[in-house]
Amino acid sequence: MASKKNPNSLVVSKIAGRYRELPLWATKLDFEVRPSLDFDNLAWKLWKPTLLLMHKVVRKEKITIKWVRIHSHFNLKRELTHAMGFYDPEEKGIFLCHFDSETMLHELGHAKSSGYHGDPWAKATAKLYLKYLKGRTQTLGNGEPWSISIGTQGLSEVLWRKTAKIRVPEGDMASSQTLSVKDFCCLIN
Image (cartoon, rainbow, N blue to C red; front, top):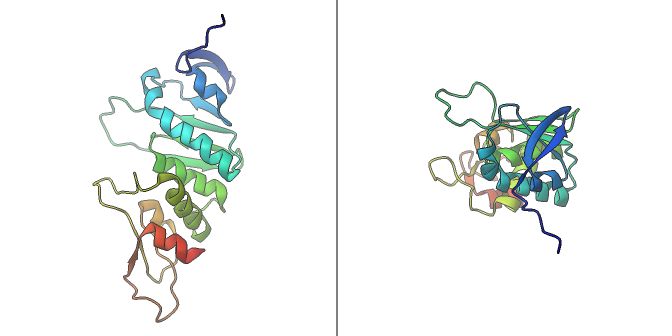
């Protein structure tokens, strides 16, 4: 009788020219997972839900991602000196520093749009948040629900901070009105 291999068992694979250990499940994704050289294998269980969600989103949304570089920050005693994520449009790759779904969807929003923090990116990201977070993590770090503020400065990188501003025609709404993400997505469709 053939034994089925545990999907969480570590296998050695050549990734980006280097031999790395990664779980069997990570070799079955639509993109190559590239753990950093100092990646702690204990972090795989933390990364698994985010990477599996990314696999689902990439497939359903037909986004081309060739690879994702991940790393862990166990026992970090200082503030991070780099971004939590970065999308490389030329390489079709993503760097992720943290295993949260919001950062991953933020970067996939860049892949679905122009790549820059502007109206197309904010709309794509808001739609991804609404579709794939399903309300369970649509909160700020303190547990407060995040929302989208209506203003006159245009939808931009403010969504990057979990809020967004969009242009509203004169007289349609007060300049300080706040919308839920769901209402915002209805407005932009």
